[in-house]
Structures are given as structure tokens and as C-alpha cells.
Length: 215
Image 1: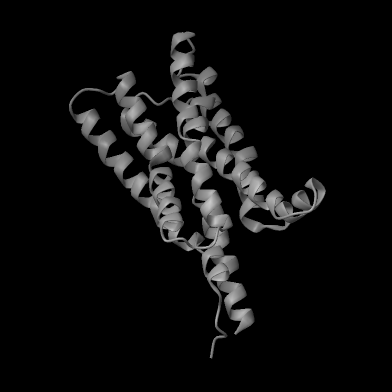
Image 2: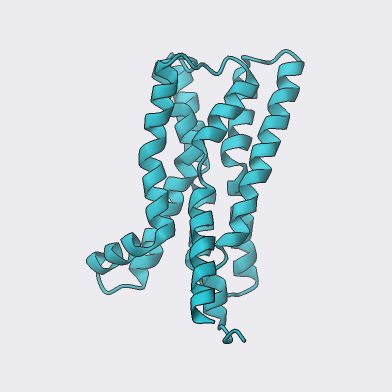
């Protein structure tokens, strides 16, 4: 028989609810890209913005709604909730990066524009990691303690790893000749950059193992 768990423990393990949101964003981005290519908008800037937003940040909308739902239910504050707020708050940065790059004349289809899909894929992840660090700091005596706790948390560490690795992969792909010359290719590149499902999945696995260890 499993031991009873309190509200704080139940709230702290909601990362499993976040994992499926990414799949909705992926599917929506691919469907929209296929439709836009069909109607002849393969290289449309605004169409590319829509595809990248949905494929790279669709899950952030759902995760933000998750955080709102947790708050409206008056549940105990959790790292999963802070994670969701952080992802929701990080959505606008890629739009600024994209628009600024276009105004500056950056070749978004060549090697110089490799960072744009990174922004769409992981700006919300950066926001989530920062929100997680702030959450941990509020419950720690000092920044050193907070950093130690942060680096022991599998979700935060996995998020940090993909933030560092993804831009390297995108740059290599562009150097090898990949170019998002259609909306479908744009969606696929953004999905490849959007590894935001990894930290929630890691959190779910850690939660699952802890539950069985406590049984």
C-alpha cells in the first residue's frame, strides 16, 4: 500500500502533466506548415513566424495555463508551477529576436540565422530555468545553497544541458547545408530545436522512481 502524500508532494510532481503539451505544439506546427506550403507561402515571413511559434512555443501556452490552473486551485506553490510560469513568460523574446534580425538584414535561411530557431525552441526553456532558480532561492538560506539545490534537481540540470547543446546542433546543420526554405522544413528545424519535453520527462521519471522507492 502506498503511503499517503500531502498536497505539497502531489503539487511538486506535476511535471508529467507538462510532457504531453509539447506534442500538441509539434503536431499543430507540422499541420500548419503543410497547409501554408500548399497555398504557396513557403518563404513568407509572417507564415514562418506562425509556424515557429506553434512548433517551438505551442507547449508554453499550455504550460502557462497549467500554472494558472494550479494557482486558481490554490494548491501549494511548486517547482512545476514556477517552471510553467517561466516558460509562459519567455515566449515573447523569440519574436523580438526574429523581427530584429529581419530588420537588420540577417540571412535567416543561411548559417548566420541559425540562432533564430534556437530562440523559438528554447527561449521559454531559459525562462523556465531562471524561474526555477528563483523558486529554489526563495526556499534557501543563501544563493550558494540555492545553486547547490538547483544543480541537484534533475529537471533544472537537464534544462541547462539542452540550452547549451541545441545551438551547436543547429549551427552544424546549417553549416552542412540545411536551410528552412519551406514552412515544413521550418517546422522540422524548430521541432528539432525544441527539446523542452526533455526536462518535464526527466521530472516525471524522477517522480515515478521516488514514488516506488517510498512504497
